[in-house]
Length: 483
Image 1 (tube, rainbow, N blue to C red):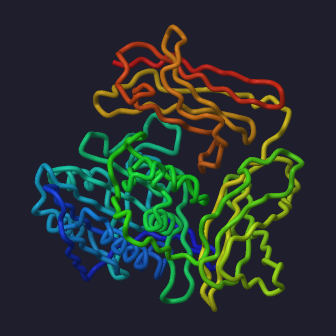
Image 2 (cartoon, helix red, strand yellow; image 1 turned 180 degrees about the vertical axis):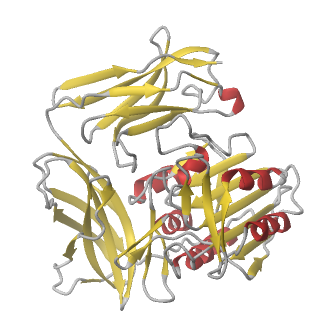
Image 3 (cartoon, rainbow, N blue to C red; image 1 turned 135 degrees about the horizontal axis):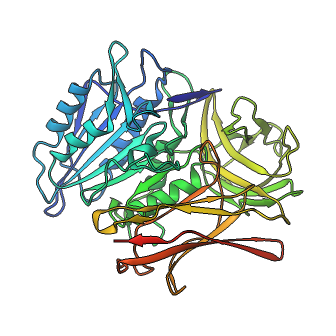
């Protein structure tokens, strides 16, 4: 499901009248995209115009891909039925062959059925409403030759790839070499968006993704190609309200390619947000950060606290920028600090920093960052769980769940039976909320070593460590058998 916040709303998009764009194709591979968004629902919260605007943003960014798209089909006012969507998929990708790439973006309400453990997406045009199941979507895309990119912008969307929750009844519905998938949230998380009037809005996820591609901020190695892994890492850093997930976990599939000689222009009035640190120790109450203003704008800051398993968007700590007296900032680079004041005076926890840019009556979320407030001296009481075996040759990944008593920074290493390090999955990674019934952290291993080569069949284990004060706490998982 989706959630509506203050002037900020959840979003997921689908459309009815199809809009078509044509671009020049470079090379032998042809690329096509189908962009779908729903805003108007019968049994779920309305998100107008967030989904519609998401589709338009995605359409605009794909048009700038230097490889070109043979066709970009956009349904931005809703789709009424499963049959209609399946027909749209068949039509948009009818000319695809084994060497082509087909991209499907869907933004709508997402459902995670706790009985069947098969997730679904709500399709609606405001007059009719149906649920698209994961198995039906997979069956339809299996009919499309070539590589498929699936981007799901919906609550609980991580359930489509079995990520964001710890339950052995979950599965990856898109496992296999023909699929790469990016989701806006974990299996148990809401996915949020904002709206500002009848003509402006969008989801946090789609905003962050399109902005990271547009401004090339996600191109971590500067090679003019943004891979799925780079996009995922960029979204994790810049999108705080929910946790993005990806399959395959370490995919170098080229999601977006840009011309380095072309001018890069950002959509947001505020960007390049940098934190001095996203980890504070208990007792530290000041957060230091900087950002760039691209055009004259009024700025304020919001601190949202995580309590009782959810972000408390209904009671944010709102702090106007008072340096100029009216909050209006001219273009330039700014450094700021803000004091964290928890409503229940909790010594540790999670805080979401949001920078809001206001142009006239229009408010835009310029960016958000998760802050992990950790104790300085305390046993984190680590506990590590994983499934006993998996088969990387079949595209499987193994989930490694780390339970901890409070927010902390984790290092996770995979070792072979002899204790030799095979792969580091994370180094001092700050924990963040995942929306799970019992909070913790989950890491995923694809069965490859540090060089990306598949490891031999055999027995392995995960070693998890956490430094608190001058002590290092270490806990090992059970044996993981690769077969």
